[in-house]
Length: 358
Ligand code: PMP
Image: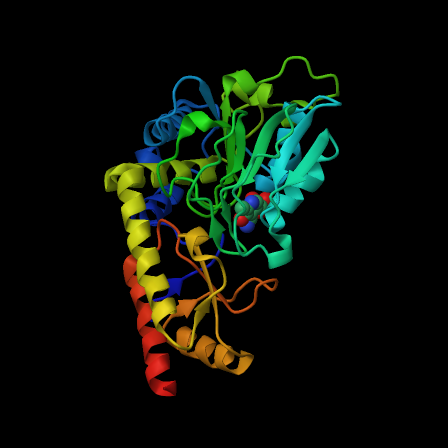
């Protein structure tokens, strides 16, 4: 039976990307070598990473003011790496507290500077995104936000109007819609939701954010300047994940770019949220205006109904729908590569559940 994979990450990848990547594992570009065996310093891989960078620039509209870097260690490494690179001892930054991942970023940043935690929705189980940023301290070097809160299913739909650079964890919605690039001093994202396989992290860094006056020790692998100087090839990079990211970016471009992707994502989101709102057996868990188009969280009135629906969904081929333990219920992750047909199967299963129970 066809599987509809609603996993929050690693997530579904476009089928043509998987097909091309499988072929490249056997024989990359008729070189007689697997993509897994080529040198990261050879011309084949340099062409791959350069294409990934130029597609990133083209799709996001990034000017030469930004570096495109590939790092390892996931977004979790960026939590401390960005603070280590952007803050000197005594510096301060503002962090919005919109969920578990934001909290992890805050915890790490506290080791490097004075961190003002603001706009917390913790007392409402992170079910909405506070929008008033007037409390940012004048001396803050940047404002850190999480554009999409993967666990709670909230997403920023109105970017903060602030006069300091925004640093953004875009792990779970990068490349899902156009963004006003100029607002951002740094964007980072683990690849494994919208971009490629786990193992590589994308960092977009505005040139004026790079500091040459840091007083603490910077190991080369944790220093953005190393990645800038070596085109992300200081050590052996994750060759295969970067290759698959490049293929996904090609797929996105062919689809029509981020505007076209956004239209598709809006249609998928509407299909599912409309059903949640119309179906008496389900309800959404977050403020309507902050609903995520990537991770759709919903619950039933009681656990018995949830267990029953989980069985129906599984029987229909809809898998990995279990909500995070801090929210419960269901979470349908409907990232870029999940076809609308899969969302339709889920919606049909919800309709059938209501018919059966009603
Ligand atoms: N930030 C967000 C918004 C996430 O969704 C995740 C992973 N689910 C992370 C950070 C952590 O990413 P990684 O596993 O790549 O360290």
